Length: 356
Ligand code: NAI
Ligand code: MG
Image (tube, rainbow, N blue to C red; front, side):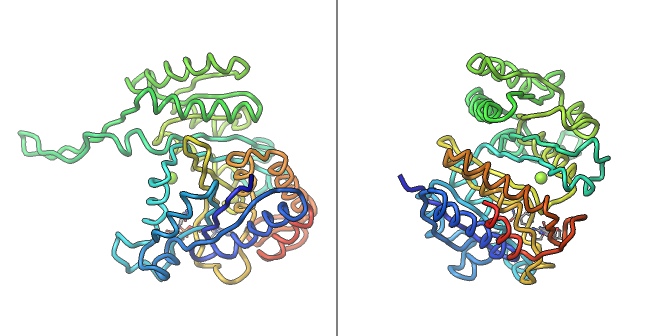
């Protein structure tokens, strides 16, 4: 069966980097038996320009019909004056919500060739390869009740609610166990069970799901300790699973361990395995249209798309190996240190395709 992949280039460097992701997919299709159909649609500022909305109806319909979506980035100074409801960022929030993407996968991988880019000592981070699985549609960011109320004293009080139902915990736990199965088989569940009731339930449900994955080594860690361990000895982790807010903070922390925003992919998955894949970085208006953007975060997002939505692990590994090889050969975009030759977006994409 042919896989339908929708490309959403977006704004700024988005079209430049997605063009390189497309090239990788086309090469896999033409030379390595990947059966896929590619389509493109506007989102973000490009959606606004084309249809007056950051998520045009036709774009959403195409995304709903696709097996996987590859997104570049949205936003830029041209759109900063627009009313909030048609801002480019709204398009991204809307598509995530419409597609029911509850599981956010953020790998932090550091190719050994780039270990110098980290703020941490190379021996602490060289070869780092961890995956944070963050629950994306529940927890305190969405919990009710929330608001600002006035106390009898006249003082105002702000409040939010951390809520997780068993089914929400179970589905993110299953996603994380399945991811650990494909990796080194170790899962660390991060919570604050010493203080929060919701974390007590979280831990109980994760333990229950663990019975279905006897081959996975499960551990639990409090979030404050997890933050400390991430910067002290990050290589101890394989997969981390956690709730929305803890995951928000820990995934940005883990991203910085690598020191190179142009290298980090991400995935957001629904219950059927359909997903939206995108680089962690934004639309980088400062370098847009100059052939300077690093396309590797997008190309590594393509690898995740192949692995998690299409079930094509071999193709995914082929892409990841090709990226490792171009770095080994000394090719670097301007955002990366070291290497022996600075190349542009297009040449980097061509080099990866050449090593597939
Ligand atoms: P940014 O990630 O776009 O840029 C931060 C810095 O990193 C810039 O100096 C940029 O040149 C550099 N950079 C980012 N990606 C790069 C790449 N692939 N290769 C080389 N250098 C790269 O974040 P910033 O500047 O805060 O936001 C710019 C615009 O992007 C804003 O409109 C913001 O709203 C939007 N944005 C969109 C996101 C998305 O679509 N998921 C995420 C973050 C920001
Ligand atoms: Mg964040």
